[in-house]
Length: 342
Length: 294
Image (tube, rainbow over all chains, first blue to last red; front, side, top):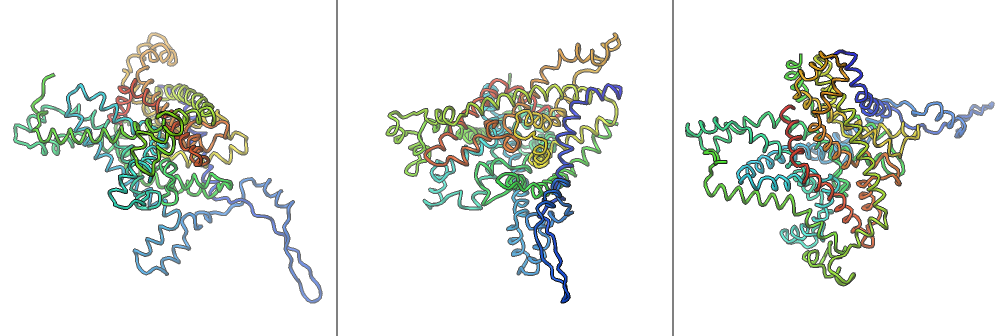
């Protein structure tokens, strides 16, 4: 295809992505280094024989003029990144000197909003991704073992947690684990504590969010593995049997290696998706116990005072996080796919 | 079809697998059935302090409305709180997003699949990075310019933003789909004197529908399920269904209005059920196509 034709075909898509993905990234970066203007303070100096005294007053006109002249705000460089709500550099220094040991230090560190959100996001991503992939693999093995006739309806049911709107799916679970809901009642019965409430306990809230994550992610892994299982070479399986491989060994040495490339792909997609975990925290009204990076940005953007600069700084840090998280996979794709395309 | 030797399993393993499978099916389906049933009760039954069985039998619903099932939640949400307006907005957004992103995506995906040059690969890699970006980080980039230029709050703004966010995924899917259509098909048309666009129009478009429908389903899901973009970029009167449900939670916790949220949750889920029922095959093939090509 000629460059010129390519350009025309690709133009609409490229324009949309440039205007609404590339430029916003630029805009986020700019916003994060500018803070809203403070009021202009004018210093008036009164000098007399005995020396000079200084008085200050707010210059309304100048403030207005300044805000119009520089709508972006004033340039503050990395100050927003370093403040308490983000990287909190000075607070960390103080904590390090004050804390009694590494455990205490970590505990205190997680009380800082940005590090708390980062910790939850990473915990969520790193727990949900492998657990959901494993659960999906088990479901795929189980569905593969039932007669063909039942598989259609089973796939239908299994797809539901994934297809349903995240906000809605999380709400449905949240209502069930409510202290007055069915699962909440079961949890209270098992714990033997009639006043136990998921809403009030941080560990329970984290657990519920992770359970929701696994519930909604496992179907994706299931579908991929199920399709993968249909293409496992039967000849290899049977010759492994003849060689005396047990059931487990056949799964371990034939099925799993066959499914491994799929797993890489799936882990990539799911790490991306889980890292942006957001809706369940809204649904569970969990912000008092668990915040994710996305939720942190959302709560800065919403409300009466839109803290655009703060949200922008968190966004930049989140984007950096995504890049770091993806870098091994990106490098790998680049190596393998780049050779093929060249 | 005969059972293959490798498929035979000892009885205990078979029972174990079946038991696990039944457990999973309950875990996957029960929450939906529970909420569907509960949406026809009053709040005192759906959230029952006394006994969770009340949500099934509904004694309070009986006492308050005279029958064990009530449509009050649906009436309250759809008529009183004007959920139909949000449903209409959702419909507009979803239809527009699917149409526009498929148009852009087929053109772009076709070009990417037919380009022998290296930049096609780079573009796909950039798209992958864009795909990984959490939408809310982009939203924080939109707000300031959209306020300045008075673009904030309107449906078209949300539509074009969703189209753009959707592009990376659409491009990946359609590129891998178009790669499966033999090059010889459009090249022979061009030998016969068609321009590239004519070849696309007369040769590729008639055979591309299976891939386009599959991709369209995922565009639909993205637009329909979105919360981050629509919640932040739409004004109150232009709200779509998902932010509307979230606003039920924020404001109407009192006086049994949580049932509005429950009934609207059921209303939002119902179309998705129908979708999966009719397009299960396409959804499965779409998910796996990405994996195999990935």
